Image (cartoon, rainbow over the protein chains, first blue to last red):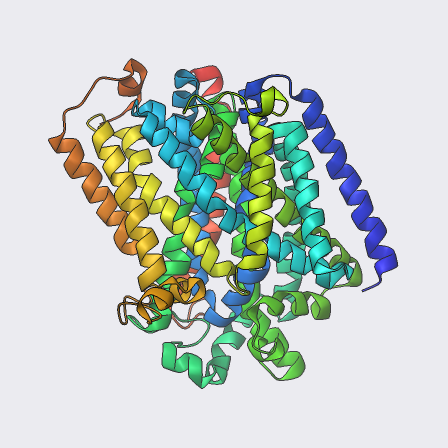
Length: 527
Length: 40
């Protein structure tokens, strides 16, 4: 790659991003502007920001590489991303979250749940869960960005990491959510254009849609023996039912991430930033197109990269990448796409990192300041010389950078699965109950959240092989990588933690006394 | 084999992904002017 072309391109890109962050800063006058964009964000900007926050470099490069191994089965995740992550999140949940959050006058996801159930504990507990566990997710997004910059711009990894952390911190500290969302939207446009071109050129290079699929089906005999033993039955078939590969695909990759998206605080709070339901309905259109060209496109490109590499080099993708799935998409781009695309895709990856990290850091900082400290009666630190939100940005970013050095390599998928899993088990029943069920009670919400978080965290630490092995706590305490045997080693904890927290929520709601809290809440709840 | 996919479940996944995006576009157009200023 010619750095004399790429570096000026990156500088121009960063100048545009910096201008947008400055614009966000100038438009940020009140606390509501900083926290929820003044509740007047344009629907196109909201949808693009949501999408760019949702899709990180790991989702494009990492999960794209994974799909080159697993095949088209990952398209079920793209389907859930569009149906649940966009349509349900905006048109169903979003409309209620927006209206209730305005009526309850709340600006963060934890305070939304806390006020809905009239519980300070729920706000503080949710804030702590976010502030403690989100940095692990933030750090792996940072790691992905740092590694990408290292490879594409030949910048030292440590410098890349610090540079990214500094840029994002400045955006968030100065401009709050408006800066985050404006820069996100620009990043999303770059991502959308590049991925749309990428999927069209890739299909075209292997003879079109049906021809590509036929060729891929014919490659079935080239699936490595190790994968066949795990249940692989070809790239255009689902893995064998009940096999380790089937459990990983269905429970972790498809269900874990697909359902988990509904309870992501940094995504759910985006619905609080628009002024009416019309904006959310319009966002469905933009968001649907965006996610289709992100996860939909990359989960098509990944499998058919096998056809391209087989046609050109006589090998399947994973062999070309030397066994490292993270290299499949970068190698495909370098070999298939024109030079200008390679340069612009570098910006796409950079966009995906900055947009995701900035939103995560913003949510971490507001959890720290609004949901934990202020709820506990702390309204200023260091004699008011630094705002609590901005202090939260600094602490959250420092924690993410430190974790980026502590976490073992190659844990991007595990850390994503962990964060999405615990959020779904801990937040989803309480969120849905709060939005739709009049009989839901504070006691039920408290118990359900504790059960959901506890069971899923225990599952990831001691039962689910990939996370338990990566974290190593089970081995340190019990001398065993996992405490249970197959299939529990391959079943994502979300699969049992979410039904359990839902059951607890329903049973406790029906058996505990309902206390009237907010009239508007009962008017909004449908059942 | 429809669409070149060996497994019908995968064929359904591919078509569903495309149709869900199309569905979002149709929904967005149909509801473009509904729900303005808290009317809903």
